[in-house]
Image (cartoon, rainbow, N blue to C red; front, top):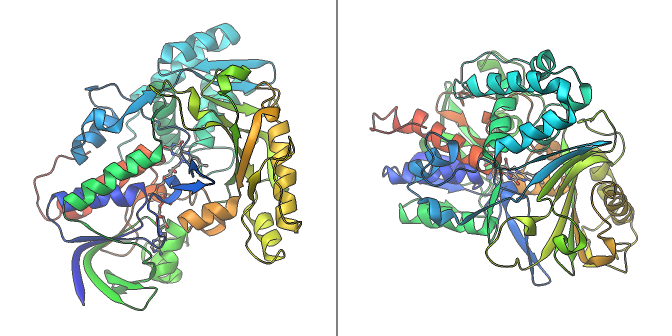
Length: 495
Ligand SMILES: Cc1cc2nc3c(=O)[nH]c(=O)nc-3n(C[C@H](O)[C@H](O)[C@H](O)COP(=O)(O)OP(=O)(O)OC[C@H]3O[C@@H](n4cnc5c(N)ncnc54)[C@H](O)[C@@H]3O)c2cc1C
């Protein structure tokens, strides 16, 4: 039987970050991944010669080369990656677009501030006060009490639509809670989107993943693909290893799990884990997404779309909640990856649209629709996909059309230029993450210290509470530092 210093469940961003860190310190470490591709939610695929990213719109947390004290700088230092190896290219500008109001923002925070001052002159003092509160809050204090962000934001800003315009991007890119966020989560997202901003490599998420996998392997880490963990083994309140889907047993001093809190509890036997932590079992997250991907026959800028990303709501009050219907297309995110300042033209000109969706309803439709037939096809004229006429595929076609129609108040009509489409539903999110209910940002309950209730088993990634590519990697790194390297008295610089 193989014994490791650490077993890591999941080869997403957090698992790879943790793995590199431990392998760099000569720990015997294995990353176990159920899929045949790495990256988790930030994975990639190919279809009809086109390369698509599963999740990536943008890397948040942009930092200039050598910028001090920022998350990206800390991450690079911890993983010993050079800034230019990431091949980052900044956004032009993005926007939050609501009925009758639009706020542009870029990687220069002054643009957003001046937009608020112009569009909401009576709110700018409150906005400045909120900005100061965000700047002064130490989101790395893992023991800080959990506060409701909405209460704090509303104590500074009295215009309800401006409140929702601020929340909209932060929720879409990282809230597991409906219509509110934990204050520490709000601060993390505010800093990463509005203070630091967006960038992306020319080749998308593949580039980042290749860098991480190469670094991990060179440092001596072991990676086992198509290797699911069936159970976490524990004795007398201490994790001792895992049992794999094929029945094989691996033992370890420490297990780091990026499978999600609800899912990790299940791997241990939910009742025992929650009871040991003196808590009720973690609630499953309710929020999931659909995403439509449109390949255009020309650059988005040539049809008059200048923004890199637009966070929109078609109603003055933004409702970030699980819809009763299959999707809620009244709000969403529109991403034009070709509108980053890329040195070369992208392979494809894309418009990606994300909407909030109801996992249970999509799942029910699929169960009643028989075989799992992928719905990707050449766009027929402007209506989207040709697909077998079962209920699931019919719904995909219908909601694809609605999703595209409902962004037209925010961008010019791109539909006549669509030559290929794809769409994923909450089932895809479950497929890539293993999260119950396709919960994109995991459980609303986070374990900020990583403690699971079982000694030697720690939560990393989404359900530790740090999201996005940079956040998830930093989560893996900081938990590896805290629970393995510092415990073993290695001299490590912490995040
Ligand atoms: C539509 C969409 C767009 C996004 N866009 C961006 C973006 O533009 N920028 C950004 O920074 N972030 C973005 N995100 C968020 C980002 O993808 C996540 O925050 C991040 O990838 C989470 O990483 P993770 O390691 O915590 O978890 P995951 O990515 O969920 O990885 C967990 C891994 O564990 C594996 N696993 C689970 N259970 C088991 C098991 N029992 N055995 C073995 N393996 C298992 C899974 O297969 C998976 O590979 C987006 C998310 C979505 C859904």
